[in-house]
Image 1 (cartoon, rainbow, N blue to C red):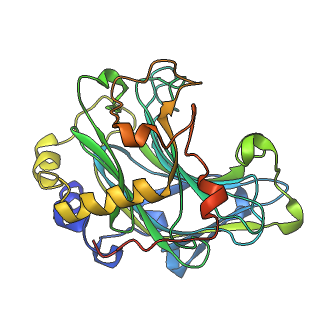
Image 2: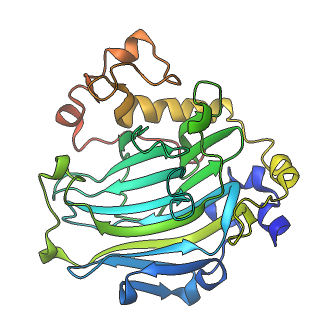
Length: 318
């Protein structure tokens, strides 16, 4: 099974989701909370997570993984969704209480007439006080159809993708040190009430008049190196991982698409947040033109005010 999940991974990450080997829910995942707020459809190939006044819902992979490619097609709740948080992420917080790692896609709901926002984050070795958040708006409506969200995690780098477009790369280098995630993690998907912080710092709460809020997950892909959950320090065949991920450097076209996303759709960067970090974290790199676009709080000047409702086209075929 381990070899089957890793086969042809380097080519799979640039292919449409339909070409990826996916798992049914019972074959790869387990419910972690939510009771009937988790619903399986299409013989377990599709999962609906809902949030109502009683609870949210969530599931996790049955295995811990050390590196790999993790993906899902997700459709977010429509209409009023302020305070609602949908998350698709890797974490080992339940195993390493004080030194946990985490890689996040967090989808942040908004009031009617305003778009969902996306936040990515990276924690390594318990660095929970040092968030490496980046926030983006979308160039499509994430409530209208499914879109593929993927995380590639190797010993050398981490890449976040939307559809086939990379939006963020984190390199494992001396500057980042032990903050680069390096311990086995499980994959999670959740929906929950983030009223205290998710929408304008908690200004807008979840309005349960619009409940249930339903997030749909499909095409769940786990292409990783499983380790024994009872012995998370056990090793997997890193040789297989290395060979499978050897050709995952971004092409010229992919890097151009990523630069376009970041220039046009990134609305917050921890590297520019001088209120939070008087001295930028060591892995941050800047150019003069980019610095002038962001305020001291890390937010891009005038981004929402001037560009609300507008969407640029990103070539999702790259």
